[in-house]
Length: 80
Image (cartoon, rainbow, N blue to C red; front, side, top):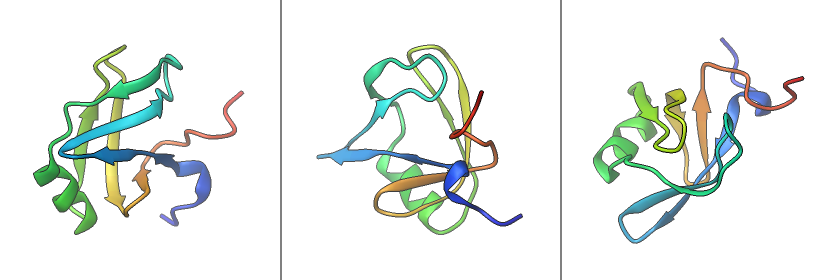
């Protein structure tokens, strides 16, 4: 599966906390996730991680990550 921009979602790291500026499911702003720095390190190695959004309990399966984006198995952008 080729990961394209539609399958990415941006995140920000502040200290040891990981924030998502807008939930891809319920659209809540500035969501503090329960994602740990150890999970982020594993995601950056390409080890699949599950992120359950605390705002609406939507589930993101993260296949990979870089310093700015989570790469998921679900099309998050361009949804109708």
